Amino acid sequence: MSIVFVFAFRPNFSILVTPNAHLQKDFGLDILDLEEIVTTLEEEFGFEIPNNEANKTNSIKLVVDHIVSHPQANIALD
Amino acid sequence: MGSSKVQRLSGMQKQVLSLYRGFLRAARSKSEEERCKIESIISQEFRRNAEDVDRKNFLYIEYLLRRGNKQLDQLKNPGTTGLSSLQLHYSHPSSKG
Image 1 (cartoon, chains in turn red, cyan):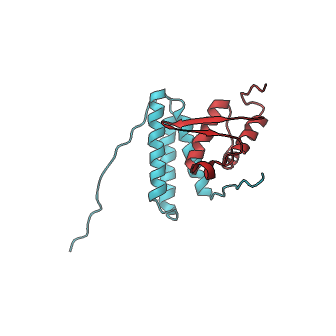
Image 2 (tube, helix red, strand yellow):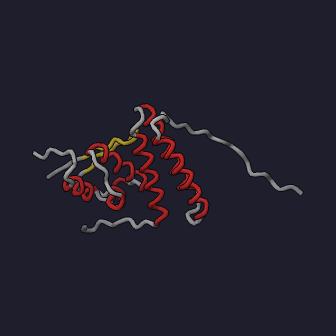
Image 3 (tube, each protein chain N blue to C red):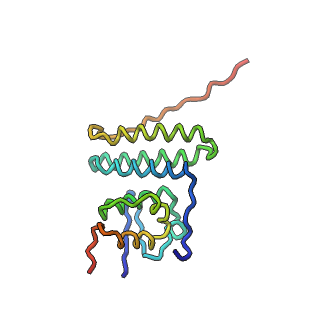
């Protein structure tokens, strides 16, 4: 599976993310940026990410795994 | 898990992040224009405090958390349509004599 996210969570600030990207190392995001990504994902996929999971969002792969494994996520897998 | 490093956060840090996310979630229920304003104000406020506040000043951080949670409760109220920030400039009274 290959999922590519385009984050446009702030005016004039968007990043293209592949599953293996490390958000803090590769893009220099800080922990508040990560929080914004988490809430953006919540809105996009229609469910809340628990706080303890959110604290692990420095790896986008973990985020993807969490979303894909969530039974209520609004995902149509082809 | 591989080589992903889990960020280890203190209890107080988790409270701050939880509050931040609460504001972001609350902002989603407002109009699109107000939401942008709210997110901008909240981001600036949290980043400014992250920069300026000594991480060991626990009393002040607890005060900020309590104040922030009250403000968040107000923002969650459907009757609250927006949020604005008033910049106050004042100097500490200098001791004389």
